[in-house]
Length: 595
Ligand SMILES: Nc1ncnc2c1ncn2[C@@H]1O[C@H](COP(=O)(O)OP(=O)(O)OP(=O)(O)O)[C@@H](O)[C@H]1O
Image (cartoon, rainbow, N blue to C red; front, side, top):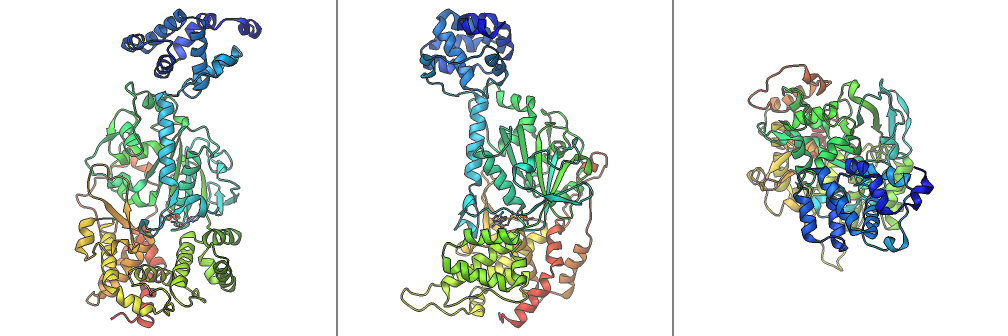
C-alpha cells in the first residue's frame, strides 16, 4: 500500500490491515498491557483475561481485539507504545516506518512507561555496571578514586596473527570494531600485556562507557567475568548458561515467561562478554577434561561453559574480550583480533600526573624528578608502578619534612618496599598538629611494622604455595593478622562470587604485591633452608606455553585428586623474572636492618 494512503488510514484500520504481521512480530505483551491499564483503556479483568490465554500469539490476538473494540484513540495509543518502547518492539519498527508513523499531538503528550522485561533488564545491567565500575579501588577500599578522574589512555598496539605490530588504536571504540581483524571467523578479541599494565582497568573503562551508553556498539547486554571465578567454584558445581549469566551479573526482575533469556539466545550478537585474567586459570584448564557443551540448557562445570563461549559453541555471534598476561598463547582460530598494551607514553604520563596531583607544587616536583630520571619514568610507563610511585610520593611527602623519589636505578623491589613503607606508616601514630613533621626514618617504620609485615608475607607465601590468589578470614587469622592490620592496605575484600552467604574473602591489592611479599617471606625466615627458596626457581623454569583451552576439546586428561602447589606459576614467574628475591635480600641486608 502506498504511504500516502496509509497516512490517511485510521489506526484502527492499520491494526486490521497489518494484523498478521503484528501477531507474528509482537513479542512482549506485558508492556502493552501495563500501559493500556495505566491509561484506563482497559481494566484489570481485561488484562487478566489476556494473561490467562495460553500462547503468546493468542495473547496478541486478544489484545488487538480488545484495543480495536475500545476505539480509535486506544488503537492510536497502542501504536504509540510500540513507537516509544523501541528496543522491546524492534521487530515492528520497520512497520512504523512503512506506514510513516508519527504520533498526533494529543497522543504525544501521553505517558508511556517501559515495563518490558528485556528493556528493564538492560537498564538494570547498565545501572549495576555503572555502580561497579565507577571507582578504581586502592588502599584496601579506604581510598577509592573515581575512574573518570584518574583513567588515562595507554598505548594499545594492534597485532596481526604473527604478532607483528600494526599501529596503535586511536580510540577504545576501535577495539570492538572491525579495524585490524585478521580472522573474521574468530569471535574473541585478545588483550595481552604485562602485569600491571592496565588490562583490567581497560575492561573496566569499556564496561563503564557501555553503562553510560558512550560506547559505540549495538550491544544491549554486557556480561563481565573474572576468569578466576570459573575455577574458584567447586569442582562438582554444575551450572547452566542461564545461571552463569544471571547469577554472576544480575537477575531479571518480573520475567515470568523467561523472555530475557530467550531474547539473549535469539540475538547473541547483542551481547558483549569480558573475561579478565585468562592466565589465572590456564593451569586449571590444563588439568581438566573439557567435553564440549553446546546446548544452552545443559548444566556443566563453569570452565566448560567458558570454553564453549570462547569457541563460539554457545551464543555464537556474541563479542568476547579476553585479557591475559603476555606470553599466554590462545589458539589462533578463535582469535578475531589481538592487541597488546604498552603502558603510558610520555604524553600519557604527563596527563596521569596532572590527574593524580591536584597541587601544583607536587605536580612540578614529581615532573622534575621524572624528567631527571629516565629510569624512573621508564618504570612509570607501567601504570601500576606509576600509581605506587605517585601514591607513595603523595603520602610520604605529606608525612615528612621532605621526601624525594628515589633517583638512579630504582628496582621493582624498591617500588614494592616503598609501597610497604607507605602501608606500614598508616599504623604509625601521626605527628601532633602544629608540631614539625617527622623526618623520614624508613628502618623505624619497618621495625614498627615488622610483625604485620611478616604476617602478610606469610599469608602471601601460603597462597602462592596453594596456587591461590584468594585467602579466607581464617587463613588471615592463622597467619597472626589482626583486625587492625586489615585496613593497612595490603589486602582488599573480594566482593564478588560470595553469593552463597559464605564469609568474605580477601585478595592482595595486586597479584604482583603478593609475589613480592611471598619472596619477602622466604628471606625473612631465618630457619628456611636454601632448598626451600631454590624450589621456587625450579618451579618457575617449568614454563609451559599452551594453546588451551581449545585443544582440550579433543584431548582427554583426568584431573588429579589434589591440586599441585605452584600451579599458577605465571605469578611466580614474575617474581623470578624480576629477581625480586635477590633484590629483597639486597635491600634488607643493606638498607633495612629489621632485626
Ligand atoms: N589506564 C589507566 N589509567 C589510570 N590508572 C591505571 C590505568 N591502568 C592501570 N592503572 C593503575 O594500575 C593498576 C593496575 O592495573 P591493572 O590491574 O588493570 O593491571 P593488569 O594489567 O590487569 O595486571 P595483572 O595482569 O597483574 O592482572 C590499577 O589498579 C590502576 O591503579
